[in-house]
Length: 335
Image (cartoon, rainbow, N blue to C red; front, side, top):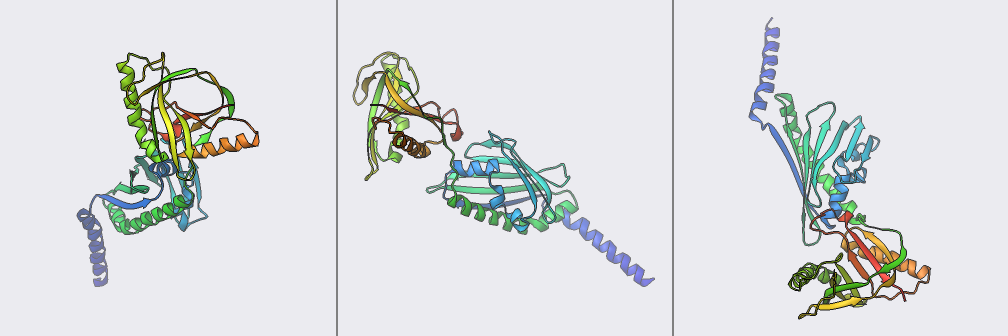
């Protein structure tokens, strides 16, 4: 009888612990890991929000390589889904709920048959050499066991998140995603063009930093002269020094009628020109990839072109943050 009484006391004590301890624990558990990866925010974002190659770096799949998984990407990222099923990692799915391109990803993560999701968030911030990443998991534990288990697992989850970012860093730095593509290479005509233009020279990075202000100055002059914009802003490359990386170009905005030169702003008129052309879709810092493909085509087909190319920027970065949707027409006038 005493043994039964002691057993009853022990059971009551355990039950009391199970009920009381969770009351002292946080109802919401957060796990955060941070890492700098030496690729651009757009590249990190594209990989994380689309689940492309998630199986390569996922820290949980790493513990059970034979587990089944599916990766489904959506063009605008929202709705992209990652599901898994294994003996060790059990079953679950993650769905992208909202994004801010290159900056933020919010996803819901479901474990087993639980209809209540936890939250997974990515904050991306441009650093001097790449991207500072904050990867965060947030979940509310149901009283009592859910709260108890979540708090007990917090340490191991932290290690998994850190391992995941280590894996992601190694993979992306060795295999940086290419976010651009080149459309069909064709011949056609460009022009005639009337434009107000500003010249500059420097490295491609320096020129890119100046472009926004140059176009703003040109637009102001167009307004002052009472002209109307007649098309997409463009650049005309005049020279490029392969040894120094210095390029010289004119940035311009087409107008419906010829304007007047004013200060550093020059009025130019181009005749209609036959050109070899193709549309580059993607970020500006990958234009060199598309130029490489055009150069290969020109050499393979022995096309005679003037090496002073034009770039027409058909997408406004201010209104379209998704760099994979930026379209730039590259045109080489033919001799």
